[in-house]
Length: 418
Image (cartoon, rainbow, N blue to C red; front, top):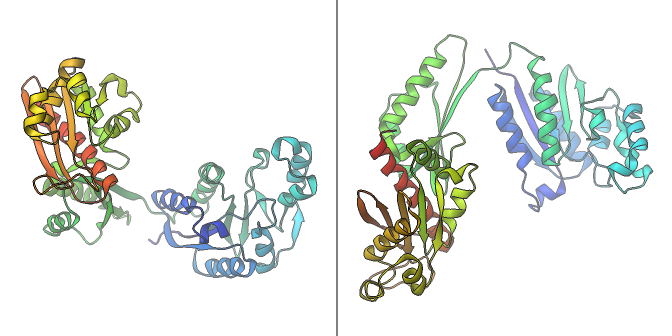
């Protein structure tokens, strides 16, 4: 069985100039793919009617459905309707329902004059407005017995119309021409992509199990995709493939799909009934920011101290001045003292500390840029781990924050068995 092929066309000079990131196409592709459709191609073109028309005619000849975003507004550079009308030989006609809404709710829609806004109501012949009551541009055409969807380039409006109108209409278009998709994204940390690839290559995975590698700093994401061929084997193959991948990658896999390190570590803390506090130096509050970005983090995160200067390490974290003098701020001893200090001060179950040289200056032969110590203090004791990260200042800070949360995650996995 072949899947229904869809092509995505994004329109706008602001996209081709790089002034605005094209997020609409990637969102649409993901939603359509997960709904069981094959993405044939994705194009980004400027506000040139000839190019828009050529791309549209080419797509119609190649695929089963087309999704076009952008160029539907009321300004002079919104040329999609004009291009569609000419390319498909469909004269623009006023949609009376849209025209009535524009004239009735003019003040609510825009400060533009009525003549300019009425452009929104002039659509190619045969156009069916997706949601006329919403005051959002967006319509469907059936051309050569194929559905073509035209959506606004504004991301929030495009996403709403895609979810509420496009996907339901496509689902009933060819009921037997979409594929059930089994997909999992494995989130991997502290294992290079080359090593991930080497381990996966030792598995005798089926040719129907499609593997993709995506470095997303500071992580590696591995995608497993299996499409159902209606032979009842896809689900079993997906389950067995997931088990095999988990076996060879082990706890380097910290989560799946929409997980992030802070949500996974937070979930472990909550399930274990443990509370965390942090003492940060080189990360400047980045760990606390990550943790508090997760809703419900107040259940397990007490707070933290950004002790950048040595005096604050002594004053707020009880790090002895003579220890700092003897070993320096970036040291195993200071990291352990910081972790113990924040734990004692807050009454947390776990104290996490980070101290290091983020660069680009401040390094030495003994402690080069990228030198980081991460400390953990618990009822079982206090210890620190040494790291040497590479990259620019922000990359080193990001690696430090991620590594700190990862150490807490692994500690909880070992002690709680979850």
